[in-house]
Amino acid sequence: FDETQWRNLGKGGQELQLIKFLATPRVEEEPQSVAPPASRTTPPYTIRRLQTDDALAVSRCMYAGYGYSYVHDFVYYPDRLAALNASGELISAVAVAENGEMLGHAALMCSGPEARTGELSVTAILPGYRGGGVARRLGQWLLGWALQHGWHGVSVDAVTSHPYTQHFCARLDFRPCALLLGLAPSSLSFRGIADQLQQRESCVLAYRALQPPTRRPIYAPPRYQSLLERIYHRLARPMSFAAGQAPGVESSLWETNAKFNLGTAIITLRRLGRDAARVVAGQLLELRRQGMECVLLYLNLSDPALPYFAPDWRRLGFHFAGALPGGEEGDWLILNHLLQQALDYERLVLADDWSRELLDAIEAEDLVLQVFRKEGVGDTHAPNP
Image 1 (cartoon, rainbow, N blue to C red):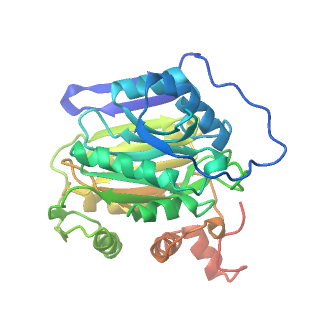
Image 2 (cartoon, one colour):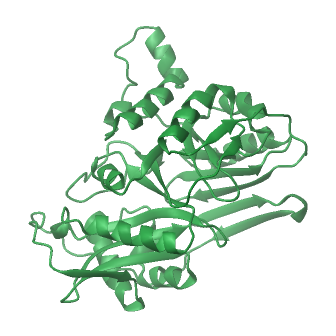
Image 3 (tube, rainbow, N blue to C red):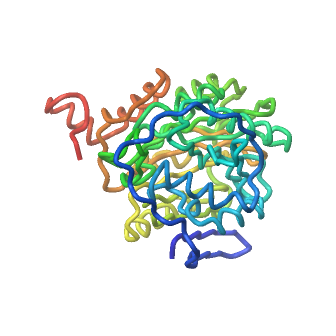
């Protein structure tokens, strides 16, 4: 299977979804050019929603920018790309020149059927037109669409193998709120920018609010309160810390989404019950057996039981990653687990001081690195894996 999703629904029982993508026509590989295409003057173009007939040109555009390495492989299958747009799971915008040439594509990936949040992603500009402002205008168009449809906000994963996506996000007023280490495989390739990665790709998670925030209590572990306070301040979101309490129910509401092509899984705990630590430990064991290399743990900051489990998350090997504002359900504390992976922190290209401060905080939680420093071996950064 390509993906699995396991959900505990409380009294509603448990649900296991196994996803296998059937063989459908994929955009064909094109011959490699001897030299990268020269930059061209960007012609007049129009930005609009993707139409079914655009899907093949978008797939070719994605291939031109990433080869077959992009993390969401549906982009290489025009039928799947069109179907996701038809269902509303994906909101694609395209930049089309007057002569019909597809200059670029970007999309919003909806967080869920009823959610009013999502991720700005699947951005690709034909290499010859990079740097001409097409990506920024696509992003602005999609943010305008999200605002018109009442979304609370939009997030984006900005890669750290190069600074250009981070600069793009800053120009659209996205603000860093987390650093996700080892999120994507090292096979990811940015043609003409970072063709071959030396380790798994890490991302700066950034957020752009679209509605005025409301003050809400945050149940945060004391060890993370200072960092969270700074994150919320930089996001201009009012908040106040509240005292936690032991969980009042036995069973947690949770789901695990594993993506085998990425080696990445996300465990989301929507409600913490007394079994929360056992659930996460069991899921970690299973994900390790499945060959996952990066696990993210999303914890609901509106749950009073969250601080109660802080020692368990640390004991299981999770470290702080950041926070992500949500909608009606609440905001999320994000913890990161690299399982057996090791990263060279010096390889991360971070475009702003605040992202570097987040990395410093994460390094401070790296137990292996602390022993390494305490013994006075080498320099102050982790060795190459």
